[in-house]
Image 1 (cartoon, one colour):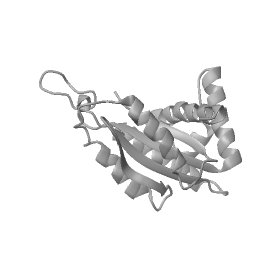
Image 2 (image 1 turned 180 degrees about the vertical axis):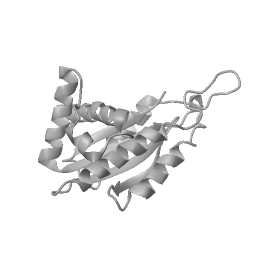
Image 3 (image 1 turned 90 degrees about the horizontal axis):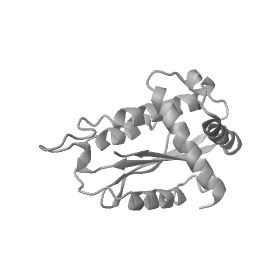
Image 4 (image 1 turned 135 degrees about the horizontal axis):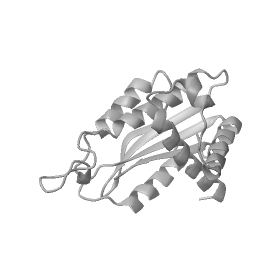
Length: 185
């Protein structure tokens, strides 16, 4: 992966985390006007992502979601997400992106896909255009992730390799701002 692509991917991760933190309570204008980060390194990464979006007008998002049993736990050990709450910030993030784009005169091309992982890397939603028309269907696929938690393994290396390769199959092409939204415990 090129150095610039990795930097944009990292910027996406930090910016996605920042958006998710207040996505359920923020409107599109608040997302646009909000401070992207609290320290200078995070601020630079957020600026890089905004600059990328301004220049390229294309965003690709990979949702990479852990599907291991540790999320629900067992009789000896409680799970880290037994109620599937991980879907709430993912839904909020998608809604924020779509809402932000609806406010734009010059629309941003947005595509997204969902992949699960445990012992292997599994496509749960193929690449699709993300907009107001596809929002409900995409969010339904996100909701489904709340119940996918039966795998015995959490193989991060398999997941990350799959996610990086998935960006190469994006119909938006490779000249896009890439965001990897990764959920795991």
